[in-house]
Each structure stands twice: as structure tokens, then as C-alpha cells.
Length: 96
Image (cartoon, rainbow, N blue to C red; front, side, top):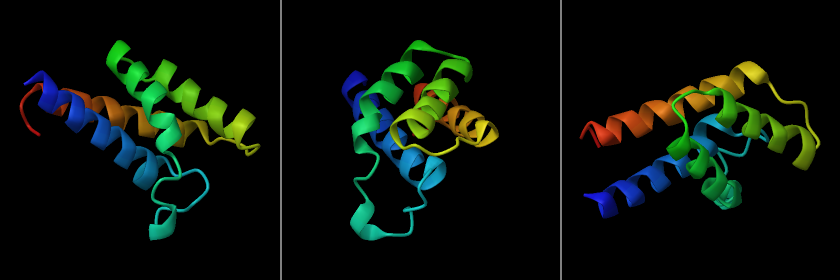
């Protein structure tokens, strides 16, 4: 079960970052599919360690503001963090 969980949560974090968070608007570009993969390990760690959106959302905002040089939309980062936590719960509840 743990092996399935690890693989599934990784996939879902990657997909949420690409299709929902998508701060630079590349989700419709197939050639950019790997654009946010480098952020998956840290986001996954935050999702695993937290049951509240704040730390996850803050990290997503930090990436946008400090690494991408853009202005983060806090509400969208909060929404993305909520979706990530919802996926974690769904997998743990056996709804994968």
C-alpha cells in the first residue's frame, strides 16, 4: 500500500502544480509538461507534513515571488494547497 501511495501522491502533486497552480500559464502547452517538476519534492514534503494550507501556500507564493519574479496570487496559492491536501486525504481514504 505504501508504494502505491508514494507513487500516486507524487503523480497528483505533479499534476496539481501543472494543471491548477500553473503560475506562468503553460498548462495547455504539451512541450512544457515538465515545467514544475523540480518543485514536486518540496511540495510533496510539505503536503506530507501538514494538514493545513498555510505552509504549502506560503511555499508556492515564495516560488512565484522570489524564484519566478512574478506577483503571487495568495488566494490561488491557498486554493492549490487545499486541492493538494484534498488529494492526500482521498488517497489515504482509499479513493485513488
